[in-house]
Length: 312
Image 1 (cartoon, rainbow, N blue to C red):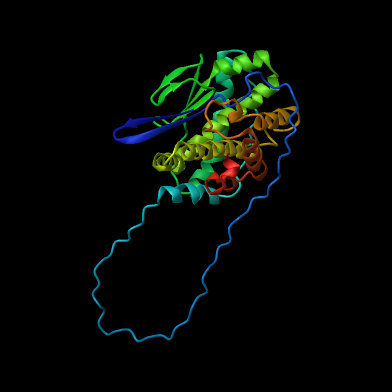
Image 2 (cartoon, rainbow, N blue to C red):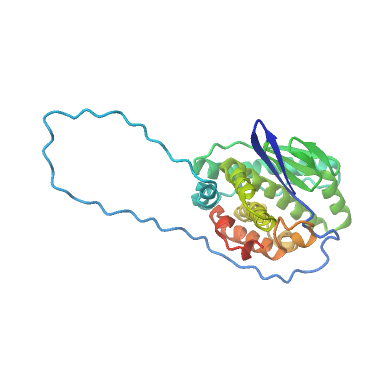
């Protein structure tokens, strides 16, 4: 789910998890085979120094007019494809354990997410600063029901990010319902994914990717091309989510039963259950999630240079 609000002549964007997960909860073991990837780095070519014969300096220094160096403004495509966040290397582990709170009540859901947020801040702050951007923690609001009015519009989904106030909105009702009806570990794994996915949108906001991507989407001709841009944005947020959990997998830990159900959730979330093809097929959602998890590197989440097939 996405929304756009115009404030003061500028576009403020929002993104959320729509109906892209099964409504019946987990009942089968996924048969998806997911790749293990190794981070790659781009080689840097440094020009060799040249030597030249020294010249005699002039007796009278020439008078030069002062010049002002102008840094060219990056295009939207350059922002999303060559963003500095891609070159920051491995994300540091937050060394946080999974919050002990359980989603048996609104207070329990709020406690789980509230304790989770500082861990995301701890891991992503160094990467954002290293990339040269200004870091700021997002706001977090856990609402009791299934809908909530935000400056970006009505939040009626599990998770929702509003760029107007840089706030993550999360539904308590959805988590409580899942915990009562379905596997409890799967519910917690889904909650961990959800808040880390919405935080992925916050990373996009801090680095300029989100606004640039929306600008690109507005300029694209045809619904199909616009939906593909949306899928690139959403699949990247899921990849960023998995980068965090991959970096912290030994401490959280994302192993055993929790690791199994997290992988199940990644392999069974997608547009098959979404009325609009704006988040990505479950096959590619699993692929990008495992790419981020195994690499622990935001640089491997660059969906904007991927082929159309891998963001279908």
